[in-house]
Length: 110
Image (cartoon, rainbow, N blue to C red; front, side):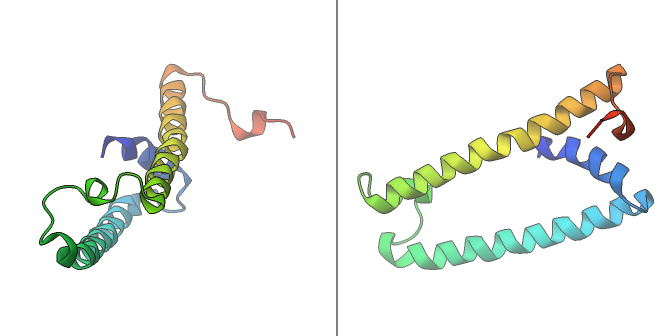
């Protein structure tokens, strides 16, 4: 989605051969596509007998006050909260670079 665009600029700059970015992107998208299909099929197989087909999202099928449901909802919340900085930081770097405020790694003192 749109959150991956800033990553591509940072990733391409760090590659040994930046001209290979398109090939790397195609390979990674195919890998992600296969994983999504496999995971979707697995979830469908797991939930198909219990609800006679998947009528809506899987989270709404879980019991509302069960321990498993609470753990899954908390885990999904933690994933969202922990991945937000992974999207915001590269966006900030991209904006700073476009505005001319980008620091070189040599400027950072350890």
